[in-house]
Every structure is written in structure tokens, then in C-alpha cells.
Length: 279
Image (cartoon, rainbow, N blue to C red; front, side, top):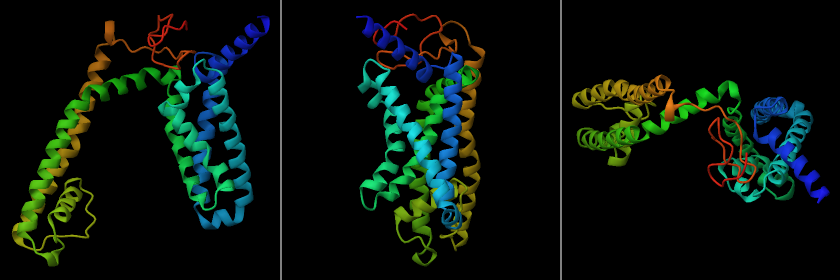
């Protein structure tokens, strides 16, 4: 019984360090993790440069093994410090942690798996977890709430843009010739989307006066279309900023449930809202 209590004690301590950011050790852990994530992504980029990889291959490999070793220990620690490990293993961040850690091991086990090393770049997604630091949690939660509140409007907006792209692409297909590159309706829709987003690759271009007129209209529409999603999110973001009271209060609680791993509890919460486990 005493052994079980000691075991639970060190597991709880480990859980607080890894999953929470409201303790000194938790903050140090998250900052260290942030630095290693950035460093690991830089290593992936440097390895892709042949001149650098040929000259410093051994040093880069050693650094990558050190970082991968840290992430492996962290992954194992996250599993053993939570009462329901599968909740973490099959969660979004659990899958990202696994995908971004395993490639280096696979490159030594399976032939031709070196290409999987690029999956280490997925570690950048883990930075979203580190945004739970108290200094940033308010802003991150506010932005998340604004994006959720805007998703319906943005969804309708994207649907309208797709309809416009299909209609304008079809019109351009009828106006322009195959010699100009408008060989089919899908290809014409591709050109419309490229023009509407102001990317403008230049691989297809209208040659007739009427086609160029429509292209000008699409270009002008593109400037307005780009601004719409930004405006929608900005309005919702400012709305949440003004209504930080009652149910709209942005909570800065960084506690993760030791039972199921769920985060996002209220500041005054004593039990997990998902499984009822004491926090």
C-alpha cells in the first residue's frame, strides 16, 4: 500500500511537470520543449541542404539522436503519468508526438524509410500545446474561441467562392481557346482560383480582349475576397475581448486531468469536467 502511494506520488509529480505549466518545473519543461522543437525543425531543414549535410552530417545526426531521445522519454513519461494512457496515445497530440518521433528509428530498421524523416517537421504542431503557458493561454484561448465562432461564416464564404470559381472558370473556358491553356473546365477553374487568390503563376493567361476583361474583374474580386475571412475572425476576436465576464471569461487554468488528459478547465475547477477525476 505504501509502495502504491509512493508510486502515485511520483506519477502525480511527473504529471504536473509534463502536462501543466503553472509550476516552476512545468514552465522550465515547456520552455525546454519549445527550444528543442525549434532546433529539431532547423536540423531537418539543414539536412536538406546537400552542402551542409555533407560537411556536418555526423554532428547533425548526433544532435538529432539527442533530441529524438528526449522526445522518446517524454512520450513514455506522458503515457505512464496518466491513469488512462490510451486517452493520450489516441489523442491528436499523442498521434503527432508518435509520428514526429518514430521516423528516425524506422530509418535504421526499414529500407527506404529515410524519406519519413521529413515527418519530424510535424513537431512544429506541438508548439500549440506549449501555448498553454499562462503568459499566452488567454490570447490563445481567445483566438481559438474566435475561430470556432467564425467557422460557420467562413464555411459559407468558402462555399460562395467555390461557386464563383466554377462559374467564372466555365465562362473563361467558353471565351478562351485551347492554345491559351484553357483546355478544359477543371483547368479553367484552376486558373480562376490562382487568379482569385492573387497567386498568379502565369502558366495560363487569357489572350482575347473579353477574356482579359474577365481576368481583370476576377483580380479585383480577389483583393476583396482575401480580406473577408480576416475581417470575420477579427470581429469575433474583438467581441471576445470585450466580453470577458460570465461564461465568456477566458480561463488561464493549465491543469490537465490526470485521469483522461483533458485540458481547458475553469480557473475554479476542482474536478475534471469530462470524467469527474479530482484535479
